[in-house]
Length: 285
Image 1 (cartoon, rainbow, N blue to C red):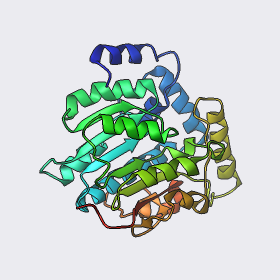
Image 2: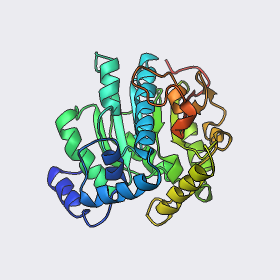
Image 3: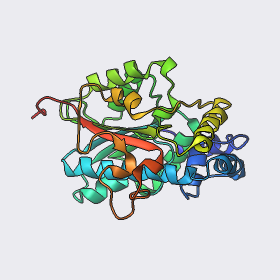
Image 4: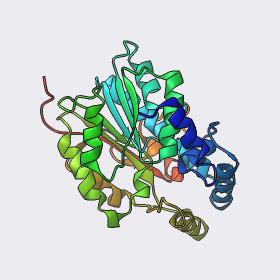
């Protein structure tokens, strides 16, 4: 984990270019962003006006999925591609759901500035004995899992909720996400949960929206985070043979909506799909 001074230096050295994590934070209404991030966010929003609502949809899905996992008795969470801790982050939702505060959370991101901000923000809101932010890349499962174990707060012999929320649209098929996700699924104990979501280009309202979504992908081709949108059918394979919890793989607002869920009346307008699946087999005693 970064030291406080190292974290500050990483943040200060990143201000010459937009940070994907800070852009996401800005569009969610957070306060961890700078002028260069806001300029890029405005460019995206000009072309896709509801992009902030799509991102809010992803964040709300994350909170509902974590709450459900905690209600089912899971106390270990690994959030890969966590970005910046902000409202509704995993450790807050888990602790709120389980007031005995027996949950353990590891946040992982491969963007140095996101890790730096996580270090600074977790220092104010987290319990260092139960919550950590570490460096890691989703595309390197073996290394990620080793680093998770090195924290000493996650036991991979017991069920884990593995969260990969609003990340897989930045993992193109050419980098073989099927193999990397299969490695994670294999490493987790029976009874573990897999929480996945991403943006979709399925069922656009018309040609204008279809082109806007294509333009969004094109914007990201010019960054270090090239994107690929997927249909529900294309995305479903990432769960392998794990059993999808009800209501299955759906538009995210249709996954156990509550009174705050955006797009609850028309989930398909959200452009976000998501689901939660359980690894088959008996849970370890």
